[in-house]
Image (cartoon, rainbow, N blue to C red; front, side, top):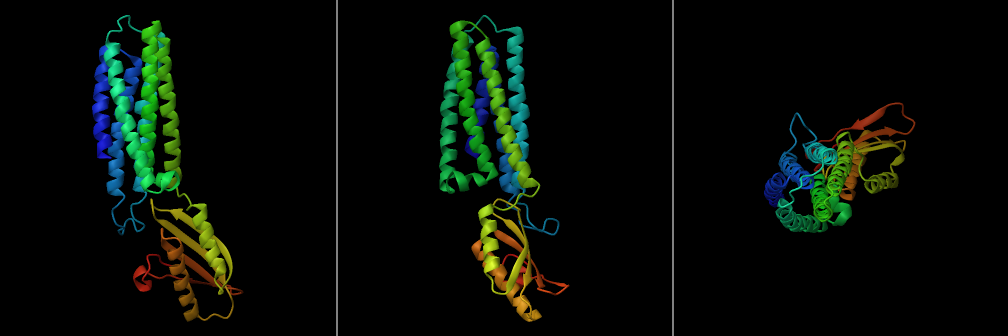
Length: 309
């Protein structure tokens, strides 16, 4: 993450200087893109640090959702600083045309070429990290890593568009190519920001656990001989690798309170083994045919497990 931040800062300065010297809308759009990426790297560093804090009285389920919050801010940064500014540059280029002096474009293309190599290297490092964490399915569950991959991939495409726009402007003398490149960069950034923001929103408002995990928990509950039926099963992601599980089950008749307690403890331990990310487990058990529910609440210390029921 620190390597990506340093690279983005250097690239942003180089693009800004080159864009101002050449008065190139495409290069200035890419400069804004790199500034947005740099700010987003700061957001993601804050997410990684703050989400690791342990649970406390004010936040009994921990701070895992901090990652989702800062990822949402990163998406907003991409939209405002990158997408909107790129649209502005494209529209202004269409309205006012481009300068006749294109001497600075050679230096600008050199800057973009270096940026393309740097962004490509950063993307390869991010994809390698995804592979180490389990591939595109498992690795991209981390919103911070997902944002880095999206930023680097978008940067490679954006720089390519800017190079094409500037080169065609130099060859044809028509600023429409560069203006179109700026608009295309803006559209790309807005789309990426929307996708990242929607995913962060879903996780912030209480996204359920993966369907596979929920299915394994439901199958485990139904396999217990003491359980007559599973009335409800609710799950919610509380962090990158943590899930809250709440289940309401009907037990077979004839079980005494001590047996119910033992059954609840055993089920919790089975769920924790089957779904390791289930760190908070709550069970509401009712004897079949009984009008009153027997809620068993066990602390992690009492059961030796992370979840409580």
